Length: 303
Ligand code: NAP
Image (cartoon, rainbow, N blue to C red; front, side, top):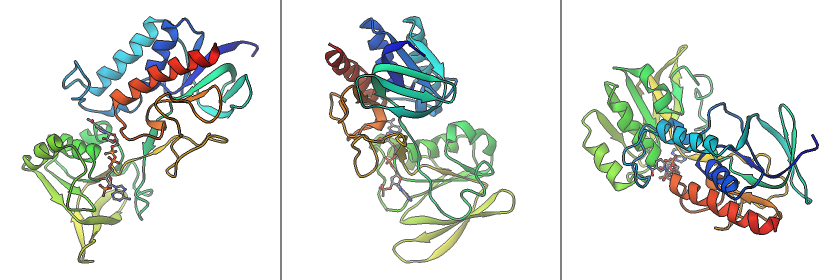
């Protein structure tokens, strides 16, 4: 393909979509590449977002869709293709996808992250048969059943609260006695009768026949093993970066792309925005800020 875009934005979560909005408003020739048909990123799987200014309690799908509609309204070119490789060095960057090849003077990486696995026996075997990484996607399959959530962050606590509305009982299994989640979520959790907090415990095995029937846990303080009868387990132990393409990019020890607030990476003309970037706070608000900052830096670079 002969065409050379000003910028290719990879990923259509809040960071990528904000970058697309800022790029179009700066009259840049931009292409957004997203592997899913539906733009929005992880926000789409969030039941309720209560900390995005001006939109208290908005449904995640509605917020993601609003971002996406805004991008379309400004006429940003976009394709649903999976990136298979990139050549980021040099003045013209090349992005290969499962359907073609695109070139641009600059690239914004906004590919976010994916749920981390527990890596215990049974997790892979029962994936989709009681093991899930998305409560809002799969919670409805567990109506009136007993489920467990593993993790102690915002996502785990939000998932437990969400599941408690339809499930008979929800166990929240966490490896420490203190949760990492925001206090307001903790208050809501501890005020929910059908949630039981199983502290100081790690999942050792997910058991069942054809589908999940119980979870073997170990108390990390006493070493005691016990089994919880449950029809499903939702794993919410954090995320890992979607940066397998990161050849030549400086990354931190967890694999997130190193870039400061200006989103500039170690490769000229390559910017990292949103959850993929090495940073302290990963929220929709900070992803959106990155999208705007990346385009500002990119404009300076192109000049
Ligand atoms: P997170 O904040 O990194 O929490 C991960 C949790 O899983 C921690 O409690 C951690 O335990 C536990 N964990 C990690 N590895 C484990 C393992 N191998 N076995 C057992 N437990 C393990 O991740 P998150 O909850 O997915 O949230 C990701 C980011 O999105 C965070 O920055 C969060 O603030 C943000 N977020 C924000 C909102 C909101 O503002 N409404 C909503 C959702 C997510 P330790 O606590 O012991 O480390």
